[in-house]
Length: 311
Image 1 (cartoon, rainbow, N blue to C red):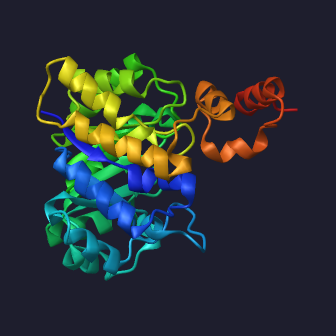
Image 2 (cartoon, one colour; image 1 turned 90 degrees about the horizontal axis):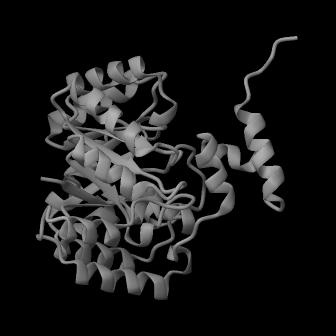
């Protein structure tokens, strides 16, 4: 059985500086839960990888926002994500008391130990926990195995493979899920980005290989070209006979409201992001591409991936 997690209010925030109104955020969560979605990721706790001033409601995840959420959906459906370097010692306790029950950790592959220490604390407090291994497409397979084992030992209930660059192919996703399943008893999840238009195919491949947690967002609203599109994913699950427990009509109504009220939510595939996905480059490299000439952007991206030849 697949557990579905909505990331619209968090990943979609990259398009509108996390500037969802409280009214919309509460309605989005309410309707998502009413449609059967198991978890709603309501935002970051204290900012993304590089916090900046002026982030909106879902970029900071303050206690009063969490409490407002807990009045409209059960805490057992409330999720938040964080970068361990951004939080202080009492943040986890405050989040739990305000109503969060699932906390997700973005784990840096080079220095995971501080994040794993915070993960242990979260597990001890009673959170359901996930580790998001970011930019998994660029990660050495041996290191992926090490991080997965370390995460399980620290108490991770779910290990997420995050295709941050949107560059993975379905057969690659299948191999990665199979690899991680072979070294851990934790559940496996996929966080797909849609740079190459493969988020749906990759999510199907992940589930076929044994993943049981899948992220998606309404209208695919997310960083760059966005994530797995919730309404497409639910339509697939129903059409394929995998489950009939979700109310697709309700999600479609929510998608229509988003499209009508939030301009940044409308589906988009910026050409530079397709180029990034093709070359397995991170979104941070986007600034190095000349966006007014796609041929030049393609050449620049190719140069970024070319090996440096020593003089």
